[in-house]
Image (cartoon, rainbow, N blue to C red; front, side, top):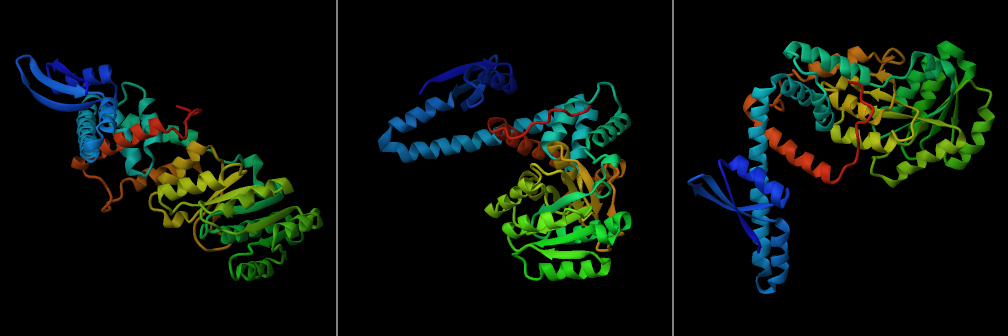
Length: 383
């Protein structure tokens, strides 16, 4: 084992020196007082791993030691991140307040850290919050008014997770389209062959609206049906809902070859992780997004965060069961204000002042993992 001795004025300076010399994976084996401050014994993590492999008779004991060292390292990282959070709060309170606002509202750490890093210097707390609101509004991608899907017409398939509200959203779109184009110019297609009663539910809506309903029990039937509906101004297709991890979700990508544009239906009431999975699976290659169940989402920040990072334009908002009243064209200012207001809710899940240092430690560990395994970027953000 290659152990090195480091002497520094304090522990923080010593740890910084250890990282510079041995890397971020260095393991501190011991510390003790020194006339010049503190003495630290440290070794590169790789050296410990090599020794563990070479010492076969005591392999189990070495593994336990490595596990314990890894645990202690994580605890130390969390503590240092908590100290850094407190120092940053004293040094730059406006920047820390921006991050706290975003975290409390349900936004993710990647977006929060990016925006906090771009906060202009010299702003007081109120000015920083106004800046944050405007940046979120500018970066929330909305479908342009002149590119309204209902007015332009075409063939659209609603895709999304089970229970995301696709069928109800389709009925609302159809009702609006009847007002724009007339009932004879709108057609509905039931392409959900998995859910019992899916076609029957659409039949009720079609009868109420006076539009035609067609059933496509498989992709081949849908491919032969679409040419028959070429004269219709708008064709809306209701697809089967699956969990994002279900391999059958890939079936929806075959719609692109039929000239059908996909609309990703995302329920704002889901947890952030579920929204991210749905956005990754159903949002890729989609023409736009419909955000549903907004009335059931006290904190829609996670949904807005995902839209901003994936740059998927938001076409419509849906909240409630009324057809077509509960369908709206999105307003960025309203959505951002609602998301930020959600961060002020008094719930058992809201962090207290003493919780933030611990939260900072957990976020630092997650950030380190993301840096090792990057998945997404935030290029193109408008500050």
